[in-house]
Length: 190
Ligand code: GLN
Image 1 (cartoon, protein in one colour):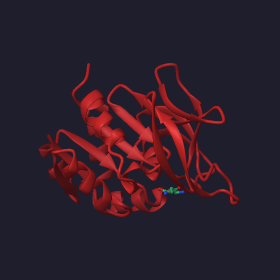
Image 2 (cartoon, helix red, strand yellow; image 1 turned 120 degrees about the vertical axis):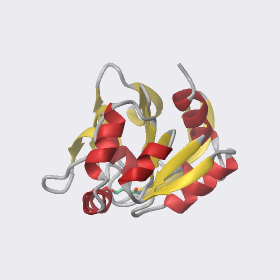
Image 3 (cartoon, helix red, strand yellow; image 1 turned 45 degrees about the vertical axis):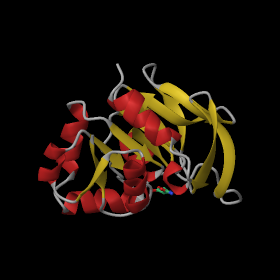
Image 4 (tube, helix red, strand yellow; image 1 turned 60 degrees about the horizontal axis):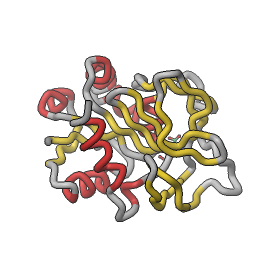
């Protein structure tokens, strides 16, 4: 498959490496026309307010929203989870998202003391090591949303139809389980 990785800001290089390691072709996305060439899209970790600002500047905001609405498979990690959420708590004033996932995320949910940490969690039933950096968690979710990982009864990995989101950054570890899940279960499943 050809996998677009939104390359405006954040750790898109690490996602591109993970896509390649999974045997797929990665295309950094910087313009709307490139969205027509891809089978799926990854929204990287970084700073959600900056990514939205740049998406508007690069005329990518509406085209990405439209692609999500028409069923393009999209995976968002950390800031990418925030970008996919329909609702945000603790966002910047008026902070917008691409939306599509029926969740309310809390930004920077883990608080200052533990704002970054690495821990072993279950993802879709298998243990993985997960890196959290000023990560959000899912505070509320709709009935269609499937929980794939939880910490202290807060969902930190969820899917809904063709959308997948994690609070953590699998692209910063050697473990490709989340990327493989996206390609094999979300993109090609059904
Ligand atoms: N706290 C960041 C935000 O709100 C996300 C952090 C990350 O992607 N590591 O965008």
